[in-house]
Length: 427
Image (cartoon, rainbow, N blue to C red):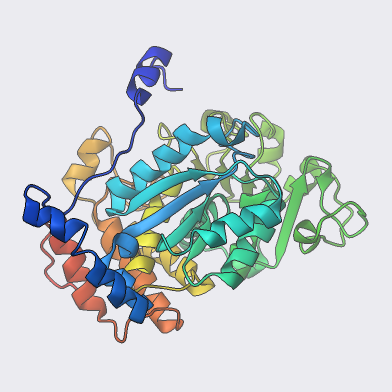
């Protein structure tokens, strides 16, 4: 917890919860009451019965996401159960609304069995336009997401997996440009073989990565191990490397999704020239940036913390991905949509940063380079760039339920909603 925030302040902030329900239509007279409920409400019900697609027009489904968990892998708190996870899920709902205008309900399910959990989520499908799975432990999270994607007709995304993957992929794209490294020749070390680690490694493979050394709590995931689940087994290598120290020698990149202090300065010193380090353990990373700086000056580094450059924050992903998906009534979130989100973030980081964003971060220099690889969450343009890219990818991938999609018009609409004026909505 930042030193400027006390335990008492945090608890006061959370009193009464962080979200509520707002009425979007007038209900101040007998006429309004007749429109909102009986007898008027029967007409949209009959319309939807005749054409289910009209639920997107006559209800809030087009702007409503479920944030669903069973509390088995909450932040850095672990398996604390569904009830104790509720403040986190409420917080996620706050971020959906704050950053992308998406309404979200938190749903904490007291169920560990994947079959039963999936059945509950499937049963909720008529209510929501999308499902954001959250803080579900591996490997169950993989099965739950995969099966829900097959049996539902709304976008489903486990943010712990894909949010981290999308943001780090955006940072990696720009790091590759600055270091002039060839991703197909890089040695990438991933410490942590949970939901996020596996999703990140898969996305790096989409970029062209061929040599990914993954480690779990027992060391390097290699072909000789007989204790690997199917999700880890796809990253098993024929290698003599067994420890993190072994894997770090000559590595071009380290992705840390493990625990504080796991990486030593000696390991960093053994990496290849111009290495990339994303140390994302929170609140204390695998190695601190100042410790890295004591060893070498050619490292490009990011963490999960806001007090260091290149913060990898999932809020750069999920609100805007669902915004784009909802606006074209997508039936799924495809690999193309996720990569479009990553590339949009990478591109936006190269644009001049507005003064209001700099002011929000204490006036620090935010110019594309080693200390600024990805945009900041309070940059309003993220909505324009990322949501529009995701919506277009959904349409191109054939999962959008709109008859046509005009990219320029959609960006202009988003800009107008935020009070922004675009010289050219197509750019």
